[in-house]
Length: 495
Image 1 (cartoon, rainbow, N blue to C red):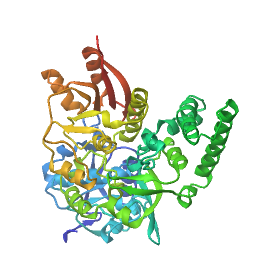
Image 2: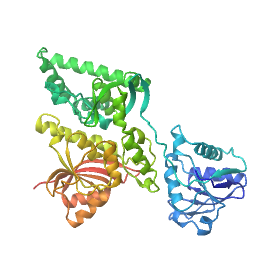
Image 3: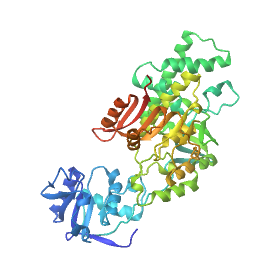
Image 4: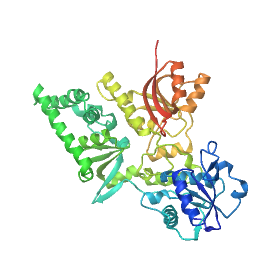
């Protein structure tokens, strides 16, 4: 932390960032005690010229004499405390270092001495319990607290940890009739996910796939079970009872899934194979859980962590421009990184994997992602292509990987084809919307059957789909109340 300090007192010029309810509350707390609030900063400055008889500026429009005045401070006064640090970084980039805010690390139960001090002052101002004068260190940079957020506890040579679903696969069946159902990411395990989803949604749409494709297959392997209608009914009745007990535990005793964590072992391909707990893990995945407790060997967990790569990536994320990062990094050291924007990624990923797993099963009689050829054209850090690569798909990048992409690839031991790109036909091409829009205009779209489009502007993109004769297969909207942005899977119409 910088040695320079600033004073918060009645002599200070105070600007509040946020001209809404929290800004109004802090304004009243300050002015009632005689503090000098000179204005507000708000993204709606073009719509809101004043608030409580004070001027409202955009961050770029703050008068230069105030920016250069060391007696000016900014207090972040927006309700969403998880957004504070992103705003602080933008303010720092304007050369302003006298800032009071709620640190993200404090919200996560950690934090430095400085962060604990600034958090205490912020809470005091918000709750109208502050003293007349505080001397506060300036902030020159936000520091991410790089630590393992997944580890629950260590038990002898094992650990309990929350593992991202992208890294949880079914058993590593080898030279066995069950090999058909082995090494499948649990999001692609549509028989089980679909069954639990049916029960959650109050229908029986997923029963047939679960019983006929999975349960009957495993029963016939033994050649000891006679398949009858009553047997099928008993299977469903048994699984419904399991569902009801798991649902009850999730609602009244969620630690049940930690105490009785599924077990798994490391696969050198870069993921964990379950050795027990398919029902528990697929149930939690169907419920929407991104991180599922597993019991695994400590040595194998350390392989997954890949500490050397973690340290290199964390150094990058401490850079001054890292607040612009919009990628998901499903790794224990980056679960709670305030700079990472999810942008509807996980809900979209679930729908995407389910869709292609069903297509694969219908075509090949098994879930086999190795048949997919994917072209990564996103020119950003799309974790989707890494998951498809992990599931066995052949992924090509149509551009040179950035330094950040290479670091994330190394973190997950992902090996993509950066040099073998061919201007050929692919099953799937992955684009960021802005890039997709540009190449549509230039008629340089990679030839593919399906296109994954990330971060699209819904209205404009759907007009493009209509014009170019694309069929929308999946649409997951995200954003604020109007939900104007979305992630899409579209299909090229033939004929």
